[in-house]
Image (cartoon, rainbow, N blue to C red):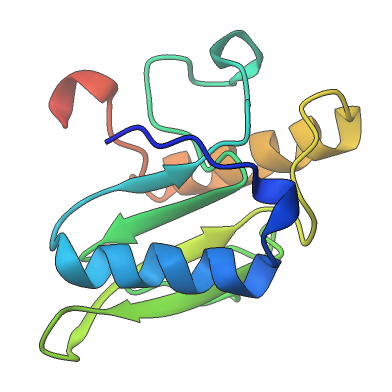
Length: 124
């Protein structure tokens, strides 16, 4: 599903809640909030990216496991059982022109790839 929203008009906390609510309704779904993170800037262009935020289903992560991320939040399924993790790359709206934001995404993508958690686009 591709959905365009003017993210700058929505509070960060509400975006996080929205992603977690989507994950409860769509068990097993990967959810990316990319805010215009361009594929040609991705370190792994053939794989999903953490971009600004990514929800990884069926994976229980902690911030200690991905210290490169700003935050990691556990998600639940529609039965309130642990179901996945929301990885948040930066604490503000991702700016695709800010080199520090791009580097932050690349660091998180590298760590998630090392953990074997960035699937190929072809596999999803």
